[in-house]
Length: 222
Image (cartoon, rainbow, N blue to C red; front, side):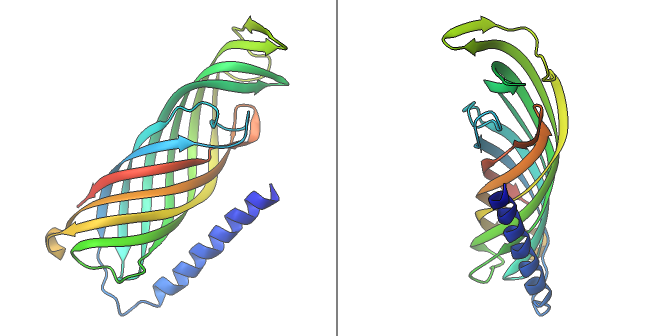
Protein backbone atom coordinates (compact mmCIF):
# COMPACT_ATOMS: atom_id res chain seq x y z
CA UNK A 1 0.00 0.00 0.00
CA UNK A 2 2.87 2.39 0.81
CA UNK A 3 4.33 1.80 -2.65
CA UNK A 4 0.96 2.57 -4.25
CA UNK A 5 0.60 5.75 -2.20
CA UNK A 6 4.11 6.76 -3.24
CA UNK A 7 3.19 6.21 -6.90
CA UNK A 8 0.14 8.45 -6.57
CA UNK A 9 2.14 11.09 -4.68
CA UNK A 10 4.86 11.07 -7.35
CA UNK A 11 2.28 11.57 -10.07
CA UNK A 12 0.76 14.44 -8.09
CA UNK A 13 4.15 16.15 -7.82
CA UNK A 14 4.69 15.59 -11.55
CA UNK A 15 1.37 17.27 -12.36
CA UNK A 16 2.18 20.21 -10.08
CA UNK A 17 5.54 20.56 -11.83
CA UNK A 18 3.83 20.68 -15.21
CA UNK A 19 1.37 23.27 -13.89
CA UNK A 20 4.14 25.61 -12.83
CA UNK A 21 5.90 25.24 -16.16
CA UNK A 22 2.68 25.78 -18.08
CA UNK A 23 2.16 29.09 -16.31
CA UNK A 24 5.63 30.14 -17.39
CA UNK A 25 4.72 29.69 -21.05
CA UNK A 26 2.85 33.04 -21.28
CA UNK A 27 4.52 33.87 -24.57
CA UNK A 28 2.91 30.86 -26.24
CA UNK A 29 -0.31 31.13 -28.17
CA UNK A 30 -3.36 29.34 -26.79
CA UNK A 31 -5.49 27.01 -28.87
CA UNK A 32 -8.45 24.94 -27.69
CA UNK A 33 -9.67 21.72 -29.22
CA UNK A 34 -12.48 19.34 -28.22
CA UNK A 35 -11.97 15.59 -28.63
CA UNK A 36 -14.31 12.60 -28.82
CA UNK A 37 -12.75 9.16 -28.48
CA UNK A 38 -13.53 5.44 -28.19
CA UNK A 39 -11.94 3.54 -25.27
CA UNK A 40 -10.66 -0.04 -25.05
CA UNK A 41 -9.66 -0.99 -21.50
CA UNK A 42 -7.73 -4.00 -20.13
CA UNK A 43 -7.96 -4.57 -16.37
CA UNK A 44 -5.08 -5.62 -14.13
CA UNK A 45 -4.51 -6.08 -10.41
CA UNK A 46 -4.34 -8.52 -7.53
CA UNK A 47 -6.42 -11.69 -7.19
CA UNK A 48 -9.80 -11.13 -5.49
CA UNK A 49 -9.04 -7.40 -5.30
CA UNK A 50 -9.54 -6.37 -8.92
CA UNK A 51 -11.02 -7.37 -12.28
CA UNK A 52 -7.64 -8.64 -13.43
CA UNK A 53 -8.76 -12.30 -13.42
CA UNK A 54 -11.73 -11.84 -15.73
CA UNK A 55 -9.82 -11.23 -18.99
CA UNK A 56 -12.88 -9.26 -20.09
CA UNK A 57 -12.14 -5.81 -21.53
CA UNK A 58 -14.06 -2.61 -21.00
CA UNK A 59 -15.52 -0.48 -23.78
CA UNK A 60 -16.53 3.14 -23.59
CA UNK A 61 -16.09 6.69 -24.73
CA UNK A 62 -14.61 9.99 -23.66
CA UNK A 63 -15.20 13.67 -24.29
CA UNK A 64 -12.35 16.08 -23.55
CA UNK A 65 -11.32 19.72 -23.81
CA UNK A 66 -7.66 20.38 -24.59
CA UNK A 67 -6.01 23.83 -24.41
CA UNK A 68 -2.58 25.40 -23.92
CA UNK A 69 0.63 26.27 -25.69
CA UNK A 70 3.37 24.67 -27.75
CA UNK A 71 5.01 22.55 -25.03
CA UNK A 72 2.56 22.31 -22.10
CA UNK A 73 -1.19 21.88 -22.36
CA UNK A 74 -3.98 20.95 -19.96
CA UNK A 75 -7.06 18.80 -20.50
CA UNK A 76 -10.33 17.91 -18.81
CA UNK A 77 -12.02 14.61 -19.65
CA UNK A 78 -15.38 12.95 -18.98
CA UNK A 79 -15.59 9.17 -19.45
CA UNK A 80 -18.02 6.28 -19.31
CA UNK A 81 -16.88 2.64 -19.58
CA UNK A 82 -18.81 -0.65 -19.39
CA UNK A 83 -17.49 -4.15 -18.81
CA UNK A 84 -19.08 -7.59 -18.39
CA UNK A 85 -17.37 -10.79 -17.39
CA UNK A 86 -16.96 -13.63 -14.92
CA UNK A 87 -14.39 -14.20 -12.18
CA UNK A 88 -13.95 -15.02 -8.49
CA UNK A 89 -14.92 -12.54 -5.79
CA UNK A 90 -14.20 -12.97 -2.10
CA UNK A 91 -17.43 -13.39 -0.11
CA UNK A 92 -16.22 -13.16 3.49
CA UNK A 93 -13.48 -15.86 3.23
CA UNK A 94 -14.98 -17.90 0.39
CA UNK A 95 -14.14 -17.45 -3.28
CA UNK A 96 -17.37 -17.30 -5.27
CA UNK A 97 -17.41 -17.48 -9.05
CA UNK A 98 -19.66 -14.65 -10.22
CA UNK A 99 -20.87 -12.92 -13.33
CA UNK A 100 -20.51 -9.16 -13.16
CA UNK A 101 -21.52 -5.98 -14.95
CA UNK A 102 -19.49 -2.84 -14.25
CA UNK A 103 -20.23 0.75 -15.26
CA UNK A 104 -17.60 3.43 -14.61
CA UNK A 105 -18.44 7.14 -14.83
CA UNK A 106 -15.56 9.49 -14.20
CA UNK A 107 -13.47 12.51 -14.99
CA UNK A 108 -9.80 13.35 -15.34
CA UNK A 109 -7.77 16.54 -15.01
CA UNK A 110 -4.25 16.55 -16.35
CA UNK A 111 -1.44 18.02 -18.43
CA UNK A 112 0.36 17.06 -21.62
CA UNK A 113 4.02 17.69 -22.43
CA UNK A 114 5.25 17.98 -26.03
CA UNK A 115 9.01 17.24 -26.31
CA UNK A 116 8.98 18.93 -29.72
CA UNK A 117 7.00 22.18 -30.05
CA UNK A 118 3.39 21.45 -30.99
CA UNK A 119 2.62 22.39 -34.59
CA UNK A 120 -0.69 23.78 -35.80
CA UNK A 121 -0.88 21.09 -38.48
CA UNK A 122 0.60 17.66 -39.03
CA UNK A 123 1.79 15.05 -36.53
CA UNK A 124 2.47 15.86 -32.85
CA UNK A 125 3.66 13.47 -30.12
CA UNK A 126 3.19 14.01 -26.38
CA UNK A 127 3.31 12.51 -22.90
CA UNK A 128 0.56 13.05 -20.34
CA UNK A 129 -0.28 12.63 -16.66
CA UNK A 130 -3.63 13.00 -14.92
CA UNK A 131 -5.57 12.67 -11.69
CA UNK A 132 -8.84 10.73 -11.87
CA UNK A 133 -12.05 10.38 -9.88
CA UNK A 134 -15.18 8.41 -10.65
CA UNK A 135 -18.40 6.71 -9.60
CA UNK A 136 -18.81 2.97 -10.17
CA UNK A 137 -21.87 0.69 -10.39
CA UNK A 138 -21.35 -3.07 -9.97
CA UNK A 139 -23.93 -5.86 -10.44
CA UNK A 140 -22.96 -9.35 -9.25
CA UNK A 141 -24.60 -12.73 -9.79
CA UNK A 142 -23.15 -15.72 -7.90
CA UNK A 143 -22.56 -18.90 -9.89
CA UNK A 144 -20.50 -21.35 -7.84
CA UNK A 145 -17.99 -21.77 -5.02
CA UNK A 146 -15.20 -24.30 -4.58
CA UNK A 147 -14.17 -26.13 -1.42
CA UNK A 148 -11.11 -28.23 -2.10
CA UNK A 149 -12.01 -30.00 -5.35
CA UNK A 150 -15.78 -29.78 -4.81
CA UNK A 151 -17.73 -27.22 -6.84
CA UNK A 152 -21.06 -26.09 -5.36
CA UNK A 153 -23.74 -24.05 -7.09
CA UNK A 154 -24.44 -20.76 -5.31
CA UNK A 155 -27.46 -18.48 -5.62
CA UNK A 156 -26.83 -15.99 -2.78
CA UNK A 157 -23.93 -14.31 -0.99
CA UNK A 158 -23.33 -14.21 2.74
CA UNK A 159 -21.84 -10.70 2.78
CA UNK A 160 -21.34 -9.45 -0.77
CA UNK A 161 -24.03 -7.25 -2.30
CA UNK A 162 -25.56 -8.19 -5.63
CA UNK A 163 -25.74 -4.47 -6.44
CA UNK A 164 -22.92 -2.27 -5.22
CA UNK A 165 -21.67 1.25 -5.88
CA UNK A 166 -18.75 3.37 -4.79
CA UNK A 167 -16.46 6.27 -5.57
CA UNK A 168 -12.96 5.79 -6.93
CA UNK A 169 -9.80 7.88 -7.11
CA UNK A 170 -6.37 7.54 -8.63
CA UNK A 171 -3.95 8.73 -11.28
CA UNK A 172 -2.41 7.71 -14.56
CA UNK A 173 -0.01 8.55 -17.33
CA UNK A 174 0.98 7.59 -20.85
CA UNK A 175 1.78 8.70 -24.38
CA UNK A 176 -0.26 10.00 -27.28
CA UNK A 177 -0.28 11.36 -30.81
CA UNK A 178 -2.43 13.79 -32.76
CA UNK A 179 -2.64 14.72 -36.41
CA UNK A 180 -4.02 18.22 -36.92
CA UNK A 181 -5.72 19.44 -40.10
CA UNK A 182 -6.94 22.84 -41.28
CA UNK A 183 -6.48 26.30 -39.82
CA UNK A 184 -7.00 27.58 -36.28
CA UNK A 185 -10.57 28.69 -37.01
CA UNK A 186 -11.54 25.30 -38.47
CA UNK A 187 -9.12 22.90 -36.77
CA UNK A 188 -9.80 19.15 -36.88
CA UNK A 189 -7.74 16.21 -35.67
CA UNK A 190 -7.27 12.48 -35.33
CA UNK A 191 -5.70 11.37 -32.04
CA UNK A 192 -4.72 8.27 -30.11
CA UNK A 193 -3.49 7.55 -26.59
CA UNK A 194 -2.16 4.62 -24.59
CA UNK A 195 -1.63 4.69 -20.84
CA UNK A 196 -2.17 3.16 -17.43
CA UNK A 197 -4.58 4.07 -14.64
CA UNK A 198 -4.11 3.10 -11.00
CA UNK A 199 -7.39 3.57 -9.15
CA UNK A 200 -9.00 2.37 -5.92
CA UNK A 201 -12.68 2.08 -5.00
CA UNK A 202 -14.98 0.90 -2.24
CA UNK A 203 -16.51 -2.03 -4.12
CA UNK A 204 -17.15 -5.78 -3.78
CA UNK A 205 -16.91 -5.68 0.00
CA UNK A 206 -13.51 -3.98 0.03
CA UNK A 207 -12.38 -0.44 0.74
CA UNK A 208 -9.32 -0.85 -1.51
CA UNK A 209 -10.72 -2.66 -4.55
CA UNK A 210 -8.44 -2.04 -7.53
CA UNK A 211 -9.66 -0.59 -10.82
CA UNK A 212 -6.19 -0.64 -12.37
CA UNK A 213 -6.11 -0.79 -16.13
CA UNK A 214 -4.36 -0.07 -19.39
CA UNK A 215 -6.43 2.06 -21.74
CA UNK A 216 -6.22 2.64 -25.48
CA UNK A 217 -8.10 5.55 -27.03
CA UNK A 218 -8.69 6.49 -30.66
CA UNK A 219 -10.80 9.46 -31.68
CA UNK A 220 -11.31 12.73 -33.51
CA UNK A 221 -10.90 16.39 -32.55
CA UNK A 222 -12.85 19.43 -33.63
